[in-house]
Length: 154
Image (cartoon, rainbow, N blue to C red):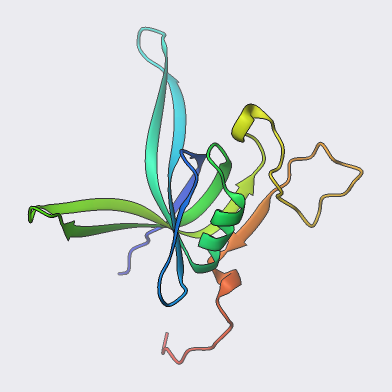
């Protein structure tokens, strides 16, 4: 039986994406994403908790992140969990768990300076008659992969 590795997160960027371009021209963007939740403990106190996630985007999604995403922006992201390891300078094994994004939706809302602009996001179903409507832009890794049929038997 095959497993499923799928993550869906909605949160805010903790800092501007860091984008690197490799010699092959492939782009990689990485940034922390904060997700928060609240609950009431046994004493009736409201407790807010925040989890931080390491997000990695490749190719076209990385280029979209570089162009449109900024610290504080709200996003919806789908992807998978990946853990990688390396040896540091002292020979110690280090690990990091990341969310490799495959689908990204830029949500309206928080942005730098506290204004609620859409930061250039556009939606094909938004009209001038409804300017107060929050714009969303959905981008998928599939948008940047050419349609090529493979000859896999499954």
